[in-house]
Image (cartoon, rainbow, N blue to C red; front, side, top):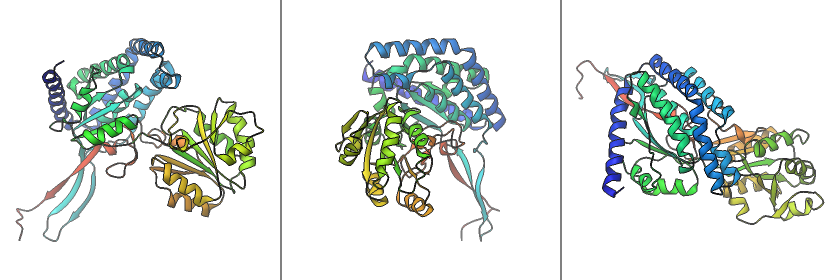
Length: 425
């Protein structure tokens, strides 16, 4: 593709998406429910094609030497596909935010003023590895009346093409433009930078991927960008935690799905209970395949334990592991734990285990993150777990949206003013 061809390709995508967004604007909530139900049926009808396409991606990834954690991120087996479809049913059941009025008031001049939720228009999403994102974004976008332009990773191109085909078939079946959901089917990275500058047609960019992708979008986009999805997540074990109950929570946060952004990366342990906590937690985690990087105190306390423990350095605590690896640091008090989190946190998900309500309140007040937990796993930072249905992303910024982005985050509002032939005095 020449530069001219690439620009023409992107312009065409943008024009088609913008035109499709206008067709979605007038859809009623019932019509959107019918559309999403049709997508469910289409995905199930094309299940074998989707799984076959994903098997090609998985095989190619393994043959190229992609490490197993990344292969797991792109894997879409029958159980996971059914989970993706079940998430659509959850979204169908959610209230449609479009058209709702946020507030209404009567001004002194007699004019009635209100704000009404409306779609953003066209959303561009750039993501890596996970094919379920293709469905999540499309479904949330359509539920809120937005057209979407998707650019997945080259590792899942076959999977994404099969999923997009099923979704576009459902759109046509419902008498809607199939270009309400478009997938960039060329792995050329210049198309990503081109999409970031398509401000004539695209209203918001959501990058779901690593630090390099986030920085690329922040630095080069001429469109508003929602940053997030990078989670260096911490859990602090307080001296007054119920030590008989902490292991299942720690293991869940680290092991349940270590390749996701809300998985635990660093365990902070109060020095008063460090010996007891490490003696119980480390072998249990090691039995699940976890290896460790520990501070000097951790190394000393774990010397007699049969675990894979390496000395931690500055990089150890500044890493989103996305694997069965855990950093451990012993701290002298709550303030040191908070200071460590402030230094290394990406603002995603942070947790404390404690039975002291004052300590818990102090932690929640002092730790600045999209989600802060008391006596719970960080794994709950998820649109489905928060009752939002599927999610577009987890935003770690503070403007427009923060935390799991569900339906409401894909809308904006417009001011509506009703007068009686009112002129400003």
